[in-house]
Structures are given as C-alpha cells and as structure tokens.
Length: 111
Image (cartoon, rainbow, N blue to C red; front, side, top):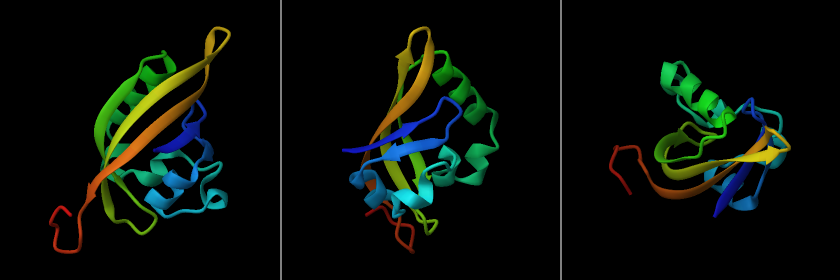
C-alpha cells in the first residue's frame, strides 16, 4: 500500500517507498510540494478540488477512484482514501492511502 502524509493545506510531509514508486518521484523531490503535483491542471483549478480540501479540513474522510499523474505526466488511476489525523481539536495532518488500479499507455488503452 502506498501512503503519503500531508499538511491540512495539502503540502507533502512524507511518503513511503510504494507511493514514490507509483508516482516515480524521490522523497526529496516531493517533500514540501503541494498535493496538486500529482493532479491534472483541470482538477486543481476546479471548484471540486477546493471543496475537497475544505471538507478534509473539516475532518471528513474521502475514498474514491482518482485520476492522477506520475512525474512524467502519465495518467494513473488510483483508489485513494484520505483520513484526517486530529491533534487536540484540529486536523494536524492527512494520510492518504493509495493502490494503483491501472494506467493508460501511449495508445490510451487501460493496462
């Protein structure tokens, strides 16, 4: 299972080796970067993406199939779950657990 830890604002704190292999980044390349690094621009610029982060900061759990991209822009289809981690009365960080379900090759066929 791939795991990434994020700040409530969406910045990457840590990631395990499985996550790094999935997105083909090194830990040094992604720590401090925003979650949007692995998202397509159309998603990041959407009202739904803003609402997603607002709901996570309210402590809401999310589990969905998401379309993401790796370091080289290749589309990945991932089953992701986002779990807020609380410290006293506020969200301290978020843990996202991911499993890859497929990717498109250059001919856009699901592998």
